Amino acid sequence: MGDDGSRDDGGSSQVIMFDASKRETHFSSNGFKRLHRRLRNNYKVVVNKDPLSKERLKEASLVVFGGPREKFSSAEFEIMKAYLHDGGSILFLLGEGGEEKYGTNINFLLEEYGISFNNDSVARTVYYKYLHPKEVLIGNGILNRGVVTSSRHISGGKKGDLKGQDKRKKPAILANKKAVAAGATKENGGLDFVYPYGSTLNVQKPAVAVLSSGYIAYPLNRP
Image 1 (cartoon, rainbow, N blue to C red):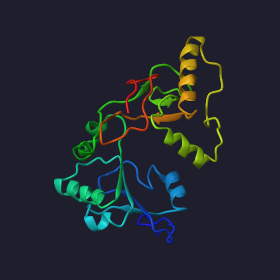
Image 2 (image 1 turned 180 degrees about the horizontal axis):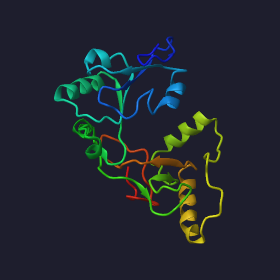
Image 3 (image 1 turned 135 degrees about the vertical axis):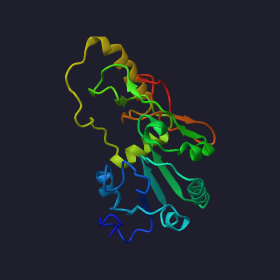
């Protein structure tokens, strides 16, 4: 059983840990339930509700912070840096508004690796597929073709329409922009993705960006 009472694959040697010690908005039993169900088929999934410690983190191959809403201490940053140095992996997730909205300070650590969250939001400049402008369908944002290769491997190479897509005819005024987006999507391997209620990043070496907002959304072409 996982720390959240869920069934896990006890035979797996790889552990994915969702942190819940910083009042995260999302973890395995809250917000990530569907993801959790898929992960536990191949990994052991646990939830951490205790203060961060070197001993606790080293139990996991990957630690996920899904929208932390509290600040980290200097000691906790040092613990996470040591964990990364020893070969561990950490996934930080924030939504629109970045650090300012969430009341956290994870940029202090991320900036050492060439990454930082911006206090902004990505929005679609014209109506397309989804009603809310912050539910952004991006068709020209793949910066690394490895993402396309991996997605095809996971899906078995099948390309299907996104569920819930609006099949109605769109206003003619959007025709040119749609054609531009379609061409850009083709150039990037034909992979569309939805980026809902998210912020942009600043990315510089040694970090590498894999997705961008493209040039139909605003801000333009941001990681």
